[in-house]
Length: 501
Image 1 (cartoon, one colour):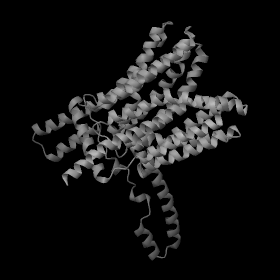
Image 2 (cartoon, one colour):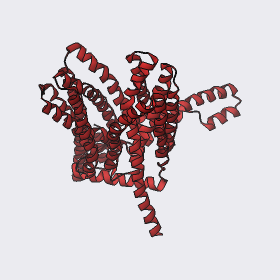
Image 3 (tube, rainbow, N blue to C red):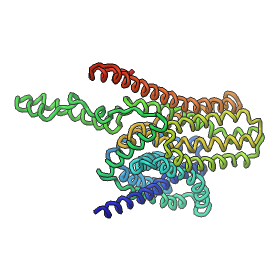
Image 4 (cartoon, rainbow, N blue to C red):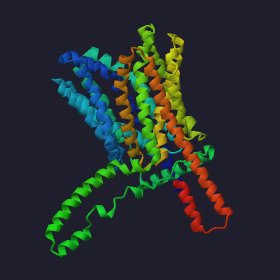
C-alpha cells in the first residue's frame, strides 16, 4: 500500500512538469501570435483597401475583449476548472483563424480575428497560470517562471514562421496552417487534470508551510481574510423554500409569484457576484494594492516599450542597430524569467518584495534613456537591465497573487489583476503618442514611464511596510497581554482592535 502511494505521488510530481510544458506552449502561442499579428494586419489593409488605422483597430479590439472578459473568465475558471476553459479556447481559436482565412470584408476580420480570437486568448491565458498554482507549492515560482519563458520563445519563434508561411502559401492558406498551431492548445488543455480533494488538501497544507517558512526568513506576512464567509450571500437576499411554502399555505398566490420573480432575479445577481467575486476585491487589501500597482505598471511599461526604438533612431542610431536593442531586451528578459523562480523559491524574500524591487528597478532603468545622448552602449545597457527587470516582474505577479489570496481564489484575483493592468496598457499607448506630438521628443515620455513604474513598486513597498508594522503591533499586544494579568476576553479585544487599526 505504501509502495503504491509513493509511486502515485512520484507520478504526480513528474506529471505536473508535463502540465508546465503545456502551459508554456499556451503562453508561447499567445505572445507569438500577438507579436506576429502586425504582418497579417498590413496584408488585410492592402487586400481590403482600408486605412492602417481601421485595420489596426482589430488588434485593439482583440486586446479590449481579452481585458474586459478577464474577471468573468476568472469566475468561470473557479467554477468549472482550468481544463474545460482551455479546451474551449483551443476550439474557438482554431475556428476563428480558419474563418478569418475566408474573410471577404474587414468587418468579418473584426468579428473573427478581433472578438473571437481575443475571447480565446482570455479563456486560455488565465487558466494556464492558475493550474500551475494549483499543482505547485514549494517550487511554484520556478514553475511559473518556466511557463512565462514561453512568452520569449513565442516572440522569437512564431513571427519568422508566420512570415515564411505567408511568403510560401499566401495569407489565406497561411492562416489555415496556423490554425493547426491553435488546435494543439486543445491537447494542452487535456493535460490539465483537475486535482482530487486529497491533493487539494495537501496543496493547501504545503502552501501554508511554505508561507510560514518565508515569514521566518523575511518577516513579511500577508493578511488573513476569511474570503469564504465574506462571499456568502445573505439570507435576506433570496426567498427561501420555507417562505415560499408558507405563502402557498396561506393562499398568497400573488405574493408567491412576486417572490418567485424576485428570487430568480436575486439568484442571477448572486451567480454574477459569485463568478466575479467582487467581495474578494472589496475586502482583500493586498489584491487592491496589486491591482493599483498593475495600472501603473501597464501604463509605464507600454510607453517605454513603444518609444524605445524610435528614441534610438531619433539619436541617429541606424534602424537595424536600433531594432537589435529589442533583441537584447528579449534575451535578458528570457534570462530573468528563467532565473527568478529559483531565487524566490529559496524563501529569503517574499514574492511581493521581489515584485516591488523588479518594478522599481525597471523604472529606474528607463531614467537612463534621457541621459543616453546618442550612446549606443548606454542604450544597450538600459535595454539589458530593463529587459531583465521586466522579465522578473511580469511572471512573479502570479506567485504574489497566490500568496495574497490563496489557491482557491487565485483565478478570480488573476482576472481582476488582468483587468486593471489592461486599463494601464490601454491608457499608455495613446498617451505615448500624445506626449510625443506635444513635446516633439521622447525624453518626457520616458520620464513619465519611469515614474509610473517606480510608483507601482513603491505602492507595494508601502503595503509591505504597513503589514510589517501591523504584525509588530499585534506581537507587542500579545506580549503585553502575557505580562499584564488581565482577562482573556479583554486581551483578545485589544489584539483585534490593534489589528484593525
